[in-house]
Image (cartoon, rainbow, N blue to C red; front, side):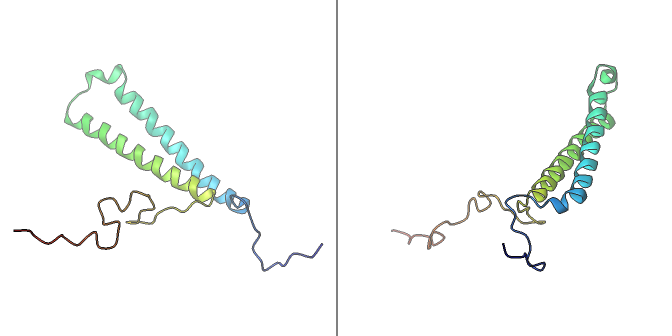
Length: 116
């Protein structure tokens, strides 16, 4: 069996386990942050908090929902990075629907001549 060249990267059929310790720590911190936000949200929406209403409480609940959504998105992106799935950069989309509403065929953006 030929000796492996040290300069050649290994051919992996999945995530690179060498990156897991770094990625796992980041993912775990996101999981803990999400858990804390969920507990705070549960307390603010529970029976004890029903007496606490008003714009300040509504704003706090909205902030918690927004922050939780952002953390869940970051966790999903971190898991994608762990498995080598491309993650869009800021302002970029990798969605198959990212070009929705844009012309799909050559000449589709040309308006037909006006008929009189």
